[in-house]
Length: 288
Image (tube, rainbow, N blue to C red; front, top):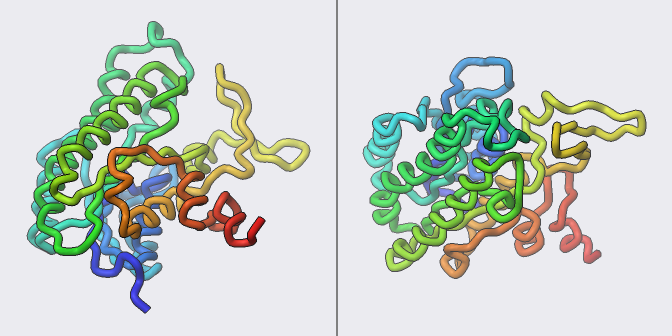
């Protein structure tokens, strides 16, 4: 039986670990050839490299191709898409996920007047401008695909509408959702969809480094200025990947172009679950 994304070519930015890795793995499990970018090529303090992700993706049934790429450097990004053009002549899926989470972790939960100005620049450079640049280079390849459902997926956040972490984080995510909406207008005549996805709380490797166990068996993270969060039932990165895969497999995807969608909403709509079988999609499968 053919896999839903068999024959399709995808790019996932920032896929060494975390949400990007989860997305890349699920696209691969659905049969896609996935070019995954990142700066981490050798093991460091946080687990995960692009090479490891590519190997795991290939083992799941897709084809993983690791490309070392610093999204601060436009020439490296241009080279990525030049390579894809040479290899395949077209592109089907671009997932803009790269974000400087480890670099910015020290600045979360602080008021803007206590932060150095470069924090603002970093949020806009990696998490907004980097997505714009990738979209710019990807568009000509998306135009050339003869397969149905070309799409750009931007990984955003509810921080676009409600306060989260700090001023710069919210500004960056709000701008990203606006970019999604406006790109959708310009790409719709070409049959290309653009969507934003809002994950919930995701149990990433970075989050795991700050986690602690409670006496009653829960796993929690203490975030100064924001409180204590129970991550026992947080989404896995692959749950986000299943949301992206479900959208990319939807024949009516263009009708959703320009919108923002939570992973929970998508799980309910498409009936998928997290890797442990939990989540909104589980209710659909059990009839609960």
